[in-house]
Amino acid sequence: MRALLAVLTRRDLAARTAGSVGGWLWVWAPPLTTVAAYFLVFDVVFAMRVGAASANTPSAATHVGTFLIVGMLPWTAFADAINRGMGSLIDAGPMLQKNPLPPSLFPARAVLGSAWVFAPLIVLLIVAYAPAHHFRPGAWTVLPLLAGQMLLSFLIAYLLAILTAALRDVAQGVGLLLSVGVFLSPVLFPLAQFPANWRWALWLNPMTAPVLGYQSALLAGTAPPTVVWVALAGWLVALALLLNLALSHSRDELVDWL
Image 1 (spheres, rainbow, N blue to C red):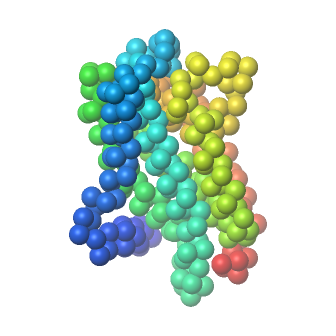
Image 2: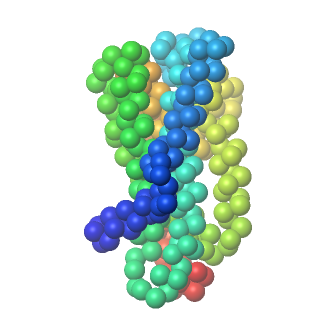
């Protein structure tokens, strides 16, 4: 199955650049342009600052553009994986109706295809942010965080792909949640600046833990606090249980829905 997944992923990636002279340049151009815009506008032109340093916003996170990039790049990767993954079963409907393939291949292909675009950029932030973390050991926790984010994206994408197959309105609702969800996470502002009485609401966003982890690793070179790993593990377990429940209730009808 791994060989088939690799073939499907390569074909998906090839389809993105088919007929294009620029090839992968056009795939990486949007996120790189966004990163450059944040840096130039907020750090160079306006020289904006986030605010006072705290445990979640260390002293290196004083530049607004620098702070935004750490959260927005993983969030964009997450949103891209979810958007591609939740429609993957519907897109593969004709193939699944003719061949007894594992449905999990298709959301996995979508998430891996997205990871091929964004994962190298996130890893490169380790080098780009070296003046902030000085390659302290904690900076390399970006790698397990990235692995955790990919697994998180797969579980959510697969679950949503099943729900979207059953009810097409799910895709519109999730698109709305993704556009609002970035404001209910520490992507645009430090956790310490969110009202304390409502801070619990941010943990309802599955990307809050990874974003806090990236901020800790890249802006200070410190390993993410325990609460980040516990929250991420909690989301993974909860989503795995929900996905298992959805699979058990849709196994006989899934192909018919497509």
